[in-house]
Length: 248
Image 1 (cartoon, rainbow, N blue to C red):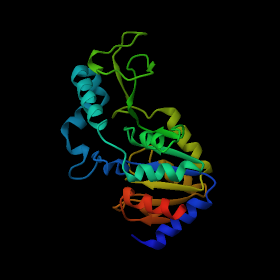
Image 2 (cartoon, one colour; image 1 turned 45 degrees about the vertical axis):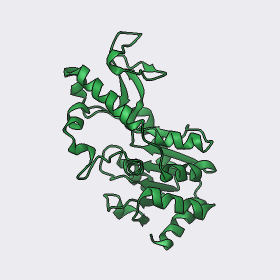
Image 3 (cartoon, rainbow, N blue to C red; image 1 turned 90 degrees about the horizontal axis):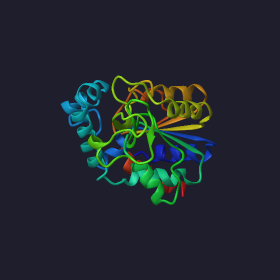
């Protein structure tokens, strides 16, 4: 790990008035949740490509909902890793907006365990741990324990996870919040993201065009590496605790 880059990243964060965190699947990978790309990524699983498409809910709803149930139960077994906790501590006394592409709730768990609120965490692609009606979009306060047996109290439609499937638009509110943060951010932390999933991937470039400094933390080169001001090659679970230590 390059100590000079760590120090530079800490200095930029310490001076920032507002920080935008742009997180991808690499942030949760060290908890055991597979990333999407790569040899063992989720996209190598044919069930992901089959059931994570909006058409599956229309054409084979029972099978799709059973798959979502399985995915949610699996992800719920994982725990936050040192990167999640370090990020929570970094944001504890700073003005941060977190735009995550992850559909888990590990960040929320880490923030709550650090005694913080989760108000600044926005899920660009939704969350497996929120639910809504597929017909009328009515949100549920609590996700059902069994998707295959749940129906909407308002219209009788099927209850689905509030995640963005292939073939669907991003939820408007989180995307607009991320765009707003990109206009005012002094620093953007690019954490474990490939930067190739659009339209979410436009956010870092937008922030840079408004003067933000970009800090990339990723073990591999990405589409964002060329525009980042500081590039730290490493896992977020190892790098973020080091930056947190420098800021303490």
